[in-house]
Image (cartoon, rainbow, N blue to C red; front, side, top):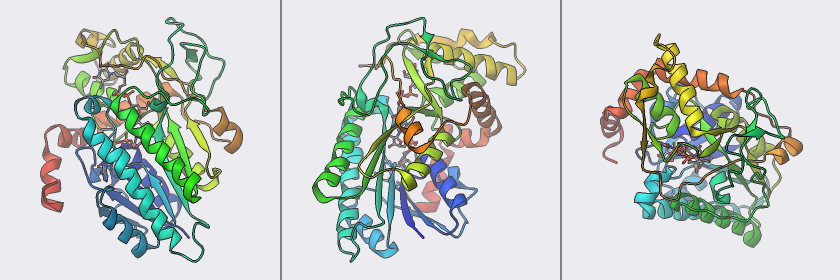
Length: 376
Ligand code: NAD
Ligand code: DAU
């Protein structure tokens, strides 16, 4: 029996984690703590909101007294911490919010767990604080092979296209070199988590994952934004030359890794999560256009004219590529879905869930939350 707080459970990845845990472990109690920022959307959890082992608590992770009281009241045994400001472009405009949520919010979660667990006779025994982080903390890799070379590593995710765009990959022992205010705030939060292990003996784990894609992602991020824009024939704003490389993983594969690591990962360890699935932005964009066009009965590629090159993102990291061999070797995790299949599944999901998208893009869901919970 476990009582687990999942923070950020109304967001993109958090909602997949909550759904997986609620369905897989009816004997657990899963408490979703989320303050519902613009990115939090309870519609992401409609299918599980009435399950008896699920509770939603609208709270800000920075509100230490509320979090501490909740831990006592619910006798929390584990924390899976995803709540964060997650969009790099927003961090460039508003770094303070990122420091507040990602750094101070993580510290508040750590301190609340520490004080509560240390007050128990068994203290940290059977407890776990699992912090979800990003590959962006490692900085950027060189793009030494712009045309791509055969990758030395293949997984199910990358099996149809196993290109690498450089020789180096992010491994767990790399020095942190964050460039954006977002990645700097995530790096700082990772350091706090490890400090709580080293200083107080808290049983912590950190994982750093590559770019996720799949259903329920907020349409400010590349893949859902571009699917939406292609459908409505709006311009596709490609930053710079579209040559930046990202390493993509289907969100449910990330959620499966989180479940496995929460239960079987070794305390104080760091695990990288990714599928060795590197893509240049412009190649993904062409794949999105072709697939959306085909699914909508248009001539595949006819919407290429929507591509609009715009000013590059400031400090735009050139290449991310995660080495996840430690996780594969130590815990036997592997991605389950080939990228091309995952992209088609994702596009179909967004096309079939137009109402979900319209609620966000029309501001309708803001009204819904106001009625349900009052003004944010
Ligand atoms: P998201 O922006 O979709 O969701 C974030 C959630 O956190 C939202 O529901 C929001 O309401 C909530 N939240 C924000 N501030 C809060 C606060 N102060 N108190 C309580 N709740 C708050 O983010 P995501 O893309 O699902 O990312 C989740 C986590 O995974 C983040 O920590 C992110 O850094 C990490 N991550 C994301 C990716 C990715 O590709 N999306 C990859 C690796 C790691
Ligand atoms: O690597 C993991 C990270 O992936 C997570 O930690 C972040 O939370 C998540 O947002 C994501 O960061 P990115 O900046 O890589 O994702 P985004 O979808 O914003 O952009 C992907 C790439 O596409 C990036 O190179 C920028 C480019 N881009 C993005 C947008 C929104 C464009 O060219 N045009 C756009 O309009």
